[in-house]
Image 1 (tube, helix red, strand yellow):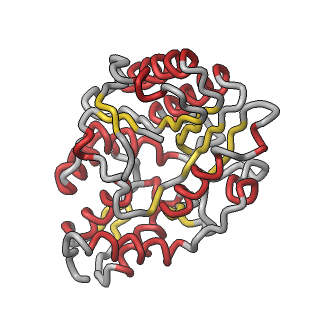
Image 2 (cartoon, rainbow, N blue to C red):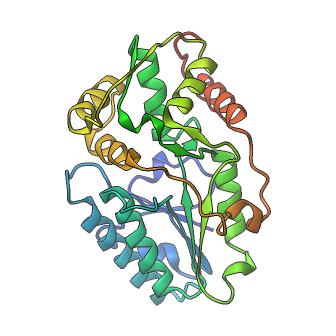
Length: 278
């Protein structure tokens, strides 16, 4: 077991880590040597306003070529839930990478995840920072769209189970990772706010206003607008799992309820940094 990172010193996992770069292919052959199952968890959104989709596909192609040279049997990929309508650029990019890996590796497993609730999830941290730092919560028109957030523990459990699942033995499979609770985005923000013991009135906005809201929200939360803008653009439709592609039931993982996931994520965060009003 080994990993690949541009800066191995930043990896906290107890395993050998090869220094490399997936964009150039440096270190991939060494990292994949003798590997039977490889996890592809690389996403690329920051630093290029509209070019991240091309970069993601290029990285996936370079990885796939190296994995085939190493005779990797199965690749496990973590992407995002896809709406029934046309996906945003962000989610279309995730889908393109999924299609490439399923085509190249007959036993590949692609997991499509909703918002991950965890102390290290940047989507979750973004919402927490906004609630901490803004006395009112302006909510654009996407506030009424629904999704099924998932505990990071359950995501990890499903990633582990995907390495050995027999559901992909006859061909690659795409499954949806989601928690048991369906909420609107406004409802999700309410639950995080309540867990933080904050009073933050919501102000409904009539339009999406993402081009204006994304830079402002990113600045307030201390995030890269190159990450926040594509994420906000993806909220324009419901992001719900496909009924016949439930990863939890197929992989034998019992999922945590949303409130328990939020409380655990906040507690884990507070072990290293105090949060406002907690």
